[in-house]
Each structure stands twice: as structure tokens, then as C-alpha cells.
Image (tube, rainbow, N blue to C red; front, side, top):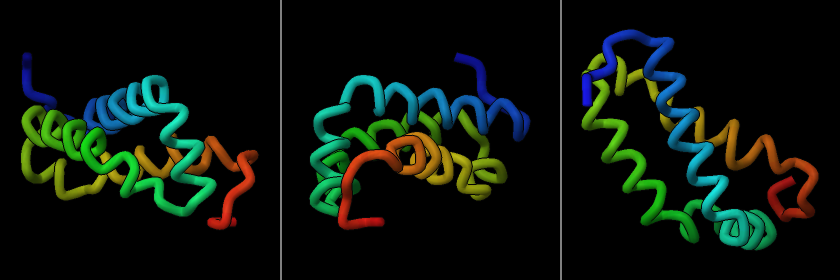
Length: 87
């Protein structure tokens, strides 16, 4: 795997990982949003994705928090229609 060396590619890669988390963990996401435990329920999966992201992205891009932003956009904002204590 080639390292990612620009901000646009880093953002796309972060969103790709977050999208995969959403695709393969829908039930956990719904449970986590309903109970305000999303990040606890998905802790292992999120950290596995973070490790992959960190491995491919240089420190200066990793520090921009694109991965965390992608998690919020994909796992939280896109599920705004789900009843939750969070909102």
C-alpha cells in the first residue's frame, strides 16, 4: 500500500474507513445512538480503523483529525433521523 501524501486523499481515505464501519456495523450504530454509547459500542472497530489510517497517513496529515471528522460525518450526522438521546 502506498502512503497517502495529500489532504484530499487523507480525507477520502478517512471517509472510506468510516463508510466501511457504517456498512458493516449498522446494528451497533443504531444501538449506540439510541443509548448514547456509540463510541463505546464501536470502540474496537473505530480503533482498528484508526490504526489503518495512521499507518497510511503521515503525522502532519494525521494531526488534522480527518479520521475523527469522518466518523462524526458518517456515523453520526448521516443517522440524524434515528431517535436518540444525543439530539
